[in-house]
Image 1: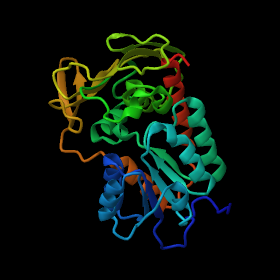
Image 2: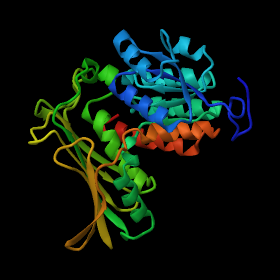
Image 3: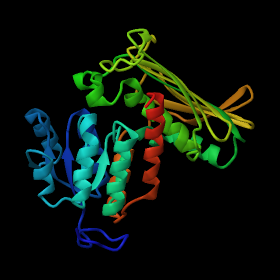
Length: 341
């Protein structure tokens, strides 16, 4: 593998990084559109088990070759690959790409366990390649403004955090319901965003206490290896003394499509992100002072592809391994403990 000084692109100066897209269902195509609109890269290869999906993605990047899979894609001399495949494949595919000297942007979860996530991060460190995961809620305007209030101390000492993500529908792919292929149910699918938002906003404090209850079909999940949870509630005790309460679910009878909130309460005020009218995409953010509130952000906010576009921009700038990537292991370790692993 070639070794280049940090900060230099793997390609000749003045050329745009060459990307491949592995998996181009709805999410993969949406991220492709966001990356292309950023204008920092070019898409040269597309692979998907569905010929129809691949052809539809090809309309966004007519010059891209439709190839059979990851190996054929990597053989085309890529600088980066965007992975949007089933969860069980993420770690192995990411490592294969990184070991070939190719940067990776992967859908969440990066791995089904902390051990899988750690192995990917180590591969990125060894290859000195840029790795990022699509933890997209960090990039909402509202969450960015809340994080700024927390980090500048304007809310005082944060002592309580409440996070919720209820999806009234649940996934439509069968692999989500297979523990071996998914790694878990609603916690792995939705709870990862909640844990990440809490730890990211608070600058990743240690989590000495974790308690969780998982349910499937309205009954405690117990130790059943053949089912995944459809409802979960948990409390995290942080080293700062703060309490983080979270709940997530699939197909909860919540009276709307989705309930999504991230609220932070401190000694000098509070702030919260919440979805509007059951939307998965429209959010407001507000700051609280006693009984008063003020708006921080309102829709519209085209945030869905910002994480992908940010990775593409950093790749075009020649950025390599980012030590902040190690925090992905912290989030995965909390998920492991929620599952009792």
